[in-house]
Length: 518
Image (cartoon, rainbow, N blue to C red):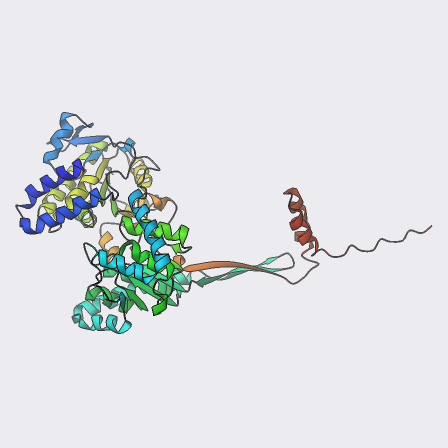
């Protein structure tokens, strides 16, 4: 909280030069309140990061906490330099305990009281007035689409079409399969779930792009019924639901929206219970998704944390472009994290990489000063960091250790280097492949794993809505006997006699013993 107060004081001082206090104070108050409520704060990395202070010449000096150099850094912005040895595997954010406790309580109430409990929460958070329905009809979604100007309508149509095309390409790659087994056939079938619950945040910024990313992907997977939930939706959000083919829309958010999707709180009004819930959200939404898995028996896409971008670059990068891409993520949230990892493709090693970072930070400071969302982006930049590496190999190690949500490769020989990277949510190869193009629907999904979870999972795709079910059939009893005999033997090795006897029922009768001549 003290860190937040310090940042707030600094932000008020700086913001007064560019915007009026009337608009700045509410933003900063909301940001501070998020810290006080216990949202994920300081460390993506559990280990203390050894920071390195930039010198006036663009070089670096040791800046351990408490040293003069570290204190002196308060006068500059940018992202702080840290030692690469500080970046280790397995250091990631955990679910917020306060949010988890609230989500569990919320889920229990919605399970017990249904739509009435949801209405209470929605009124509490200013989403619905007393007696107002949470449901938005398909006709209202269509009307919202038609109310937009032609340029906005065409934009939504194009984005939805590109996302659909990519998702359908994924779906076509996942097929039924069949193979021979002793005495018969075995295989798998790929079938969609029946109902998808798609969540889109509606807090600081409206996110119609998230509606498209989730709902269109569910449709491409073949889901029969798609339910979208988003609080206080603007017409463009409802329009996005329309072009995505949503069947139902609930104008509620937070943990109670996830609880309503997981329990079918509005099933009496025709909104079915979701089999899978997907989409990004804050700590409360993430906690509710975790609870839904364990207490409501629904599937989820992932547990997403604050947004993050890592730019892997060398001295050939465009510092202005890299800084702009970092700020594009920083403006998402005060707890977002922009990261730059630099190396040199030529001579100069770590010192040259430090100079590259200095150029990027200089560009970042200049762009941040005039960014309308500076009040949000500034504390996010303070959470970010930069690493100067001695070699490409070290830079790859750092990148793989972070396993970032978004990974940009802006360097010489970018494709060959991209092929060596192992852990990321979405990969953006070359300076032209801006991460923001992924955000706004060039094709691949923008709902991606964060906080190091890219080491074991990928982004939202049609697979999140599909089930691979295996089957087997025995047609030739004689040909199956070797497998039956193995089952009998293994069952008795494991001490499961019931299993052995069940398998023995499938054995062929032993041939009659031959009579011996006397």
